[in-house]
Image (cartoon, rainbow, N blue to C red):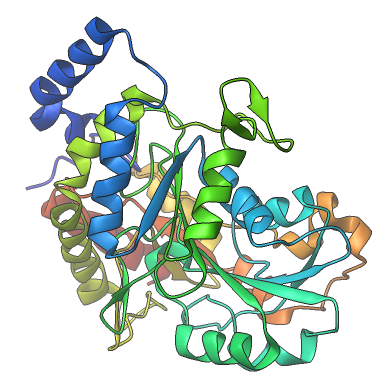
Length: 370
């Protein structure tokens, strides 16, 4: 029986580390003794392994998921005066990357079931300045890629998949990140495939874009101390790459365990609350288990009383953030995103979560709404 006085974490990175610690310590020792810390063998090997996992031609290791988005936009030629369509219901990095290249984020409202972009509302936002779509696979749920790619083809738009929360998720059997022009991943420690610091990656079958990102990540260096254009310092380091290589071998197991935890939550809560949907033609990998309830505040209070954490992702949609005030959006402009932001709540989710703890968490939620 679950000890109801113990603290259940939102995420337990130590539980994932313990079975891997000897292998990780050995890898780190080898790197330290080699003296090679930047763009060494672990980075190149990790790039090859991620490319193979996704069956794409190229993968480029970067310093963060934000940089993966930013440099992908740059590599695809998105620049000042362009417009890029995206969702307001995501982490700010998605839209920040658009602003970094001088382009204008154009927000499209979301589906209230999957929380991904409502593709039926995209075309009305397309103008002569629209050059790309950044689609977000929110919380590990693949977006409606067939519709998005059809719109992109019709209007000659580039497609970047923000797969920061969806490493290993699939859409009709295809790994997310492989359907558009570029796929972008974050290896922030809390991600399904998480480093022990920051890290990111861009994958693509467009070798010209891949080569551009390789140059951009290292100051635009084309030969020793030769710089053909202004670049950035965005290199995935050897230590993080080594850790990620070890974890990559377990990612399918990690994602499978997340799905099992999600099944427990949904089996208990499915008749009482709006649980995450998992559509038949895609594989949700539950970066977060995010429910919706008008009684969210009550749920959070009772969970906290029972030493159970919860998080609200995201309480204020991007179109209403102060950082994007210059775009001129107002309350009511994107009603589904605004309504969802008032109701979403995420429960503890990590591969090592004890099933009995998951049951206890779900039963506590039931008490809060009962």
